[in-house]
Amino acid sequence: MSKEEERKILEEKKIQGRAEDAEAIRRIQNGDKSAYTMLQNKYKLLINSLMRKMVHDEDDIDDLTQETFIKAYNAIDTFNFNYAFSSWLYKIASNTCIDFLRKKRFYTISLSRPFDEDTSDTVFEVEDTSSLPDMKMINDEKTAIIEAAIEALPEKYKHIIHLRHTEELDYAEIAARLGIPLGTVKVNLFRARKMLQLALRKYTSIF
Image 1: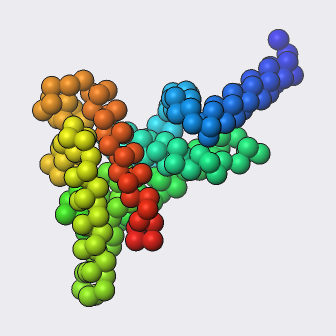
Image 2: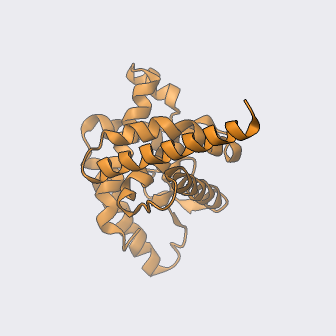
């Protein structure tokens, strides 16, 4: 097979892949949430690879990968079909990772410790400006909102958030504590964080 023939085959596969992605996105936008699983399975290794180049802790890599797919899902209605989904997702992943690394460089307060700087959920953290009365009031309000959102989670999700972000257990330790498979830990954390993000979306003016 000549290089030109190989190039044509690769180009055809690329076009086919974009068409499959576009069809899945349209299904998601029309309410078929199951179509998103296909996109996650297709691009998880790509996003994981990106995170691994920038972050070394495996649990952080998994957290950031989950965070990327949650953000992409929440923004799926804004997707521009003129671009490849892979490029759009890659940009979201890059920004998520950069934001994570940027916030780790600074001392942040952890809003009653529901989340900490060692996880992808630093979107819920704020800089420690508590010396300013107005900022302290805002931070207190954020704390109350986050705590209420966590408290409203189903018990198993509330518990797993507590183990990960309050007790600061890694995935393996959580699996051992709960007596469940590691994969179940990751799935439940993903679902818990997704619920929290959805619950907090109405507070965009605060966070």
